[in-house]
Amino acid sequence: LCHPRYLHVLESLLEPERVIIFRVPWVDDKGEKHVNRGFRVQFNQALGPYKGGLRFHPSVNLSVLKFLGLEQTLKNALSTFSFGGAEGGSDFDPKGKSDTEVMRFCQSFMDELFHHIGPNQDTLTGDIGVGFRELGYLYGQYRRLTGEFECALVGGRNLLANSNLHAEAAGHGLVYYAKHVLADLNRDIKGLRCLISGSGKLAMHVMEKLIAVGAVPVSLSDSKGFLLDDEGFDGSKAMFLKDMKSQQKPLREYTRRYVRAKYFDDARPWGEKCDLAFPCATQNELNHSDALAIISSGCHVIVEGSDMSCTAEAIDVLRKSKIIVAPSKAANAGGVAVSGLEMASKSNQMHWTGEEVDTKLQELMRDIYQKSVAAAAACGHSKDGPEALVHGANVAGFLRVAQAMLEQGCV
Ligand code: NDP
Image 1 (cartoon, protein in one colour):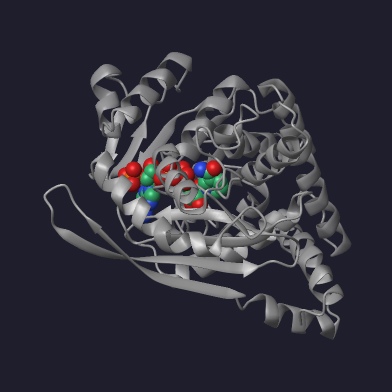
Image 2: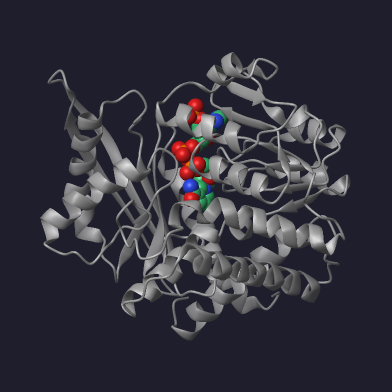
């Protein structure tokens, strides 16, 4: 890894291959005109066609998307599939917009983006603010413009729906990854108290899987604060939360039905007692002071669901306290893994049941965990050392991309 040729690869890898920035004009329901900015950062294609998320959120800018594009490149490299990495999105905020406003925005966004994507060029999937609704509208416009059914989008309700698990994959994979970390510490996940942040697509599926494996998730959050149910969420509470979310009700509504639960305004859950923590909202959501709080809360393992949940300062503090951090690029790679499976099964005209995909997802998460541990061991880390998994995932992902770049003369 210290060989000078890798320094040149690193220099080249840090620069995205292509950045597309475009204007997205759209009209709201009152007839007023708006303009947002659209982006696609096509980061690295050495391993295969670009693949990565789309984020619609007011905080989206080029800097955030470049960081997410690099993370996606390394994450895709950790999977057994051959995908390059990309990320895109817009500073458009779908929150509070009607379905027709979101539809008009998505159509305008795709009017430009369709020139740059395709199944052999770049495939898109959801991220913050982009779910079934947005992916459906984006796909409709892509299909109308290209006349192609071959899909450049994955993760929508009927897109590549030849397995039954795409939407759940990242969240369920995160819990499988946590189980591997715990197994190497001779611990079982059953009965462990878990903090989750976020209450979007990822967080809800993490909660659902934690309940299924017998763990006790006790918190969720949104951009206004966090919800704590000390007795733990169970199947019927999860159903209630899902219904609430589908009606776009705020998280605090839960406390009207479950009166012993509490909602804390403008706060994050990291000071609450726990064994495991699953940050699943957004990048840098666990900072230096949150790290100090989580150490006092009794937490042993942090499993990053959101891409790079912990700041560098937080990682530093956590490492000194011997808290294990499972890095997002490995732990949340379940979505990549399942879309790789879906693409393979589609080209073979196969349909897999949910159970079959779940079994494969478990194998893929085990493979990613083992690859990270092996790369860390090669660099002299013991597998239960606090930084082994972060270091191992970076090294294993980087080496696969670097090898391809060197072979192809990309540096
Ligand atoms: P969603 O849009 O479905 O949900 C995002 C959640 O995070 C919401 O509860 C939102 O609260 C909260 N949130 C967003 N921004 C902030 C913020 N700045 N401060 C506090 N809370 C915030 O997104 P996803 O669940 O899809 O994604 C969540 C994270 O997981 C992202 O970092 C994404 O990159 C990562 N991820 C997701 C995958 C997936 O398959 N969904 C796969 C891999 C990674 P509110 O509703 O109030 O805005």
